[in-house]
Image 1 (cartoon, rainbow, N blue to C red):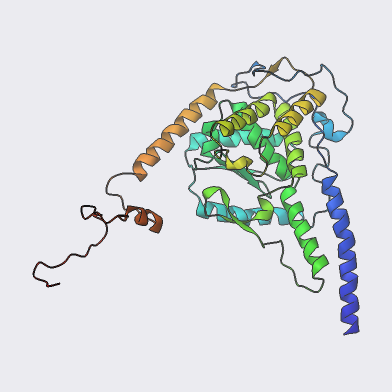
Image 2 (image 1 turned 90 degrees about the vertical axis):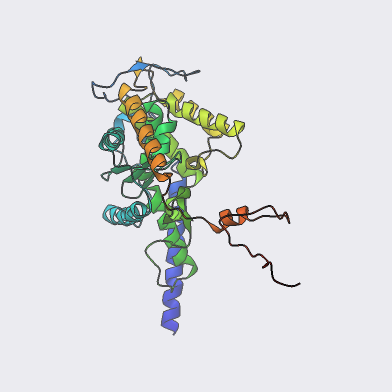
Length: 374
């Protein structure tokens, strides 16, 4: 018994020490920012002059303080470093199992033109990122303005995001943000913290591979995915903002589009409170966040004469996707198609007063027989 107790105390002590270093490492990874030459995009794409109401003024030359501020170092730096109990192989396996749950519970867009385009935009960003895993990019049929990437590079873009973006660079900005989460391995770092906390609090406990204590019904879809992989700390969100600007810049996109999209979302929220897209629910586009992004653009991204802002293909794909979504809604609402009515909907139809003339054709009613006596 004493041996067991001694072993438990020793494990608790080691776990506590590891936990301390685990929390220190990710927190110290506050994002710097990008700087350098952007990669050329396919010739079929058209480039436009830097646009926007008030584009950030950038310096002609910058001097990166470290590799995380050097766009030229992308792909050869340790963005995902820190305490992480998940190997890349285990991370991919985990992401694959979560992706299977997503696709079982979601309606996917299978139009080859739309899916190929979104995949190509994403893969161009991945090639100009620090990601160490291959990406699988698919489109979900959902009106929600959202995109999310699971550990291991399983990336989903909602059709609502494509339709809400006004330019290809805005779509690329949101996608770059999610790619940055995967490159920095934020999901498995969160899971690692969960495991270490389990060790420190219950040393003798047989723990499960990752903390499954919290699940979320994600973005209106019936997806039971651990909160560990859906919600990130403010430090992680700042780092993803910072790194995504670099990925946009190196791919050739105008980083100001990232700010433009934020400002439009913020304006929508002011006009109609509560309508902010769920993609920003855990990290809303606050004035401070927008200001920090603008400062990073000015500080570490050298000025360029041209950026890729949008393409005619983006407009074509967006129009095609809009027609697909409209056609599906017409089909779903076709007359004669069976529908399921919730209990709440049924109760709303129930008469609330004592008006004898009120009726509900969908509910049975009781009437007194003419020959019955009181």
